[in-house]
Image (tube, rainbow, N blue to C red; front, side, top):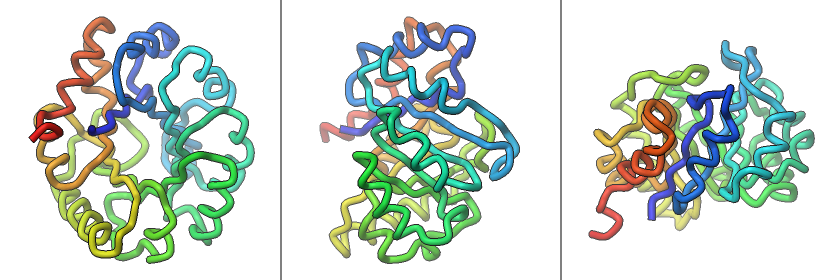
Length: 222
């Protein structure tokens, strides 16, 4: 079943607890955390004080995407915050293989992300073999509500082919401009994990579970 990862970057931060709890009945979701440092990307979001308390209000796995210049610092600093998946950027890491090896000792899952202008070919083969997740940014990272970049489909297909050919075991996750208009096509192309923010959180909290399910097409049953 496709994992849906609601990004709380788009939720009402004045009511973050009730916003997250509105997702309590959802099945097979991750809570996606966009952590930005205003250096690697131009925006600045939340840090440790928010993340360390999130596990107290949700039983869903925490999926942290670190859009930061120094992921090494965050790898150690966030290790006690019950994060399930820690994703860092290929463009911000000098030795991604070593980073993944270290990170797997601290987190159940280690992921790597690439920006829209970074081709799949730049991901080292050793990284493909060792990582648990690859996050394709289908918008420029830093802000929510952007339009999906259609050429992201080529990256999805390339990663899916590499996975099948080499028996790799990573999830393919995509973030940026995800809605019910492209969810089925993305899943068919090979995506296992859909990150969505504005689409889910733009309406009433009572409708969040319905919005989540609308991103999980019946392709799972076909």
